[in-house]
Image 1: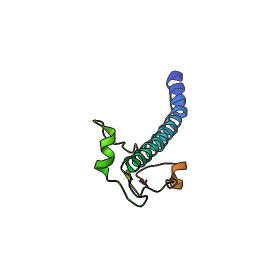
Image 2 (image 1 turned 45 degrees about the horizontal axis):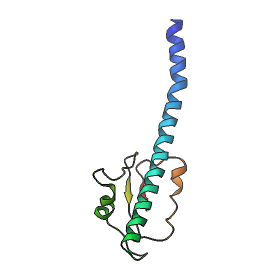
Image 3 (image 1 turned 120 degrees about the horizontal axis):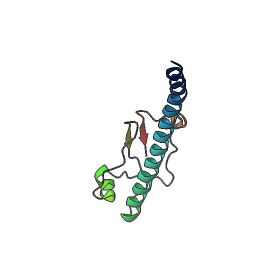
Image 4 (image 1 turned 180 degrees about the vertical axis):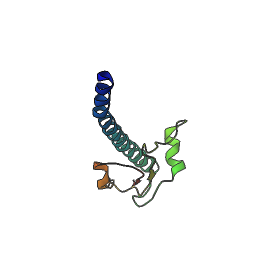
Length: 106
C-alpha cells in the first residue's frame, strides 16, 4: 500500500513537469521553424532579385528544402509566407506562452 501511495505522489509531481517540458519544446521548435522559413524566403528573394514587396510562393520556397518537406508547426498550426521586407515581423505575443494552432505570418 505504501509503495502504491509513493508511486502516486511521484506521478503527481512528474506529470505537470512533463507537460511543461512538452510545451517548451514545441515553442522552441516553432521559433526555429520561423527562423528557417524566413531565412529561406530571404535567400529566394536575394537570388532572384525580387522586390521587397513581392511574396514568394510555397513551391518556390519548398525547392530549397530538396526532398525533405517544409517545416511543420509542432502545435498543428500553419505558417503563412508574407512579403520580402528587410526586417521580418516579430512573432505575435502568444509565442511567450504557447503556439497552439496559431497562424504565423512570415
